[in-house]
Image 1 (cartoon, rainbow, N blue to C red):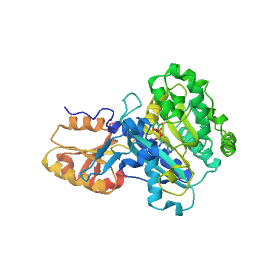
Image 2: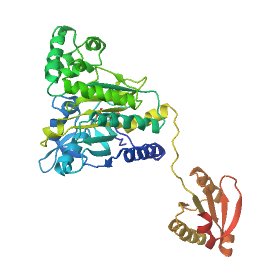
Image 3: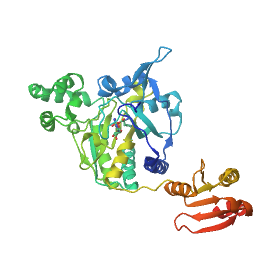
Image 4: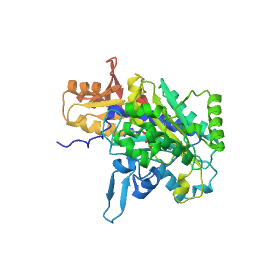
Length: 415
Ligand code: HAM
């Protein structure tokens, strides 16, 4: 028996109501905030991700699905959505449009991670990118947008965590201070953190091991080492969030797992959830477009995992509207009736009524049972008597009441 690859899953019909609901809310939200949809290819040149997400990150080092195609090109299944959007921004000259350019995507993301609840090897993200402006009002708007999304789907008990990790002018100084602090704690660090200290000191702050967390808690804070511009940016952002009445908690250990971030970083988490329950992650990436070969272009964005949103909807018992089901089930008895039923089904569908036509030659009882299980509102029954009089029996599946109706009147009556 074949099974779906580890860490991937099928989205069966009964799950689709959740997916449709989330997607509809996403589309509504993006329209409200002026975001337009972009779809990028499922794979890209591997160097795009190595360059943007960063060589020393878990994503690039351990998690990418990378392959060489038959033409010898080194390609990678998209492990995140920001770099492809930036690549498209540059490739299609979107800097010529009014800035910021606001784009969103709903796309599958591939990461070779250790699968567990809420963590998959293929997951879907809804992501937003606002490219071409560094106004902290844009940061506040982007964060507000993510926050309002959860209000729109009735998900509550969430926290918004916020930090600023500075820019390329102030961060080197901060990293030196951080390394000096950690130099006196090297013996107590886990093996991973010893490597981080050399390769990516900022990531020391989000180690999940309790011993390392205690050291990180007392570490110097990036927000205390910002240059005046970053400081002012961060202060204004906090002021705007307060104006918008978005509650946030400053978290000096929030640094994110991708290297492109500058200044603002944020996450939204369920109040009682752990790290892999994070619903939203995002932040500024003011240097990324330039690093990919463009002009200096500040930008900010975020992404949220759709599976995690749905897990939380279920956990909080939030009902979602059902998908429209079958309206009419056509049952038939005998060969002649079957031919009439085939024609009738086609005629009704062309008139806009959703129809399920019985197949095979089951008893009427079995056919009605099937209609019931499919949730059909009505059953139309074609038997010998009905054929003679050019009618069908219309059965209301909820009340079981039945009446004869002329075939020519059916499309109108069912509408
Ligand atoms: P990220 O934090 O790596 O950020 O992922 C964003 C969200 O995707 C997470 O908060 C989580 O909800 C979901 N997610 C991540 N990995 C998994 C997984 N293995 N299984 C299920 N869900 C997952 C980014 O990818 C950035 N590109 C976000 C961004 C956009 N920053 C700026 N613009």
